Length: 350
Image (cartoon, rainbow, N blue to C red; front, side, top):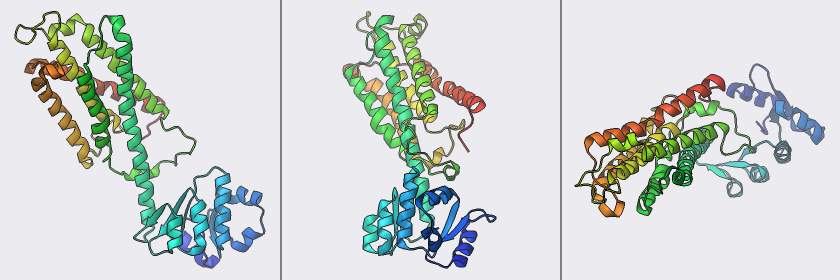
């Protein structure tokens, strides 16, 4: 806390709001800092909690030194003299009743003048990062599976199993609708218990890579098994009504189309939470529920009305049951991955 108040006043307020706990942390004045070199301040900065009788130049100096330590620096202010420090910080906050110069220099304006809004800004910022990472897990898993099927398919005696029109629909499902589904994730209070993410940290973490590669390889393997196995083809038998060309098993190809979309739709539940509880706070994200239901409905409908455009034929209720059974296996697989991660690496859910 950098304030123009007297040292005793600043120290009392800092204790009340939790900046100083049990006497831990340093309380300095502007005159104390003026006597110190930059190197000396850098050494004590991790323990510095309060700067009293502060001048505007103190704010700018501390921002500069903190950034030289590769810290992510946030600064608040409302007066004209605060503008340089607010502007030079990584994230500058200005108050709604502050000067126009400070507002223009800042990144975020707190309209209600309530410092609790700072906490909410951090919480929603962390939620946004997590939503982006959830979408990346889902999207890259689909890409890994699709690339492996396209590359390995010819070696197993099968060409591309999806038509261009079907791929267009899959692309809509995996991009547009998935982005909409993950955009409404709840800003959970437990996110505030996590350590700040360093600026140098990769957007894709090790846990994300494990989900992408394990689930992606499994999807590819199950897709190739679905297309080449005599057992599976025996479940989706052609008949004279649905297959005009006996050489092409449209029933199997239609089932695979539904299976591929359904499996990725089920994988949304895996991607949306790091927890073993896939339904954690799910009712707080209505857009997710709507998208999942919409995809199941549209995919089933397209199967019956797609015809030659989507290269589909109607499936029986029993055949839909088989499709769902194959598709839902992605959930226990990823739950097993999460359980092993929690056991041997640690549970990221605080």
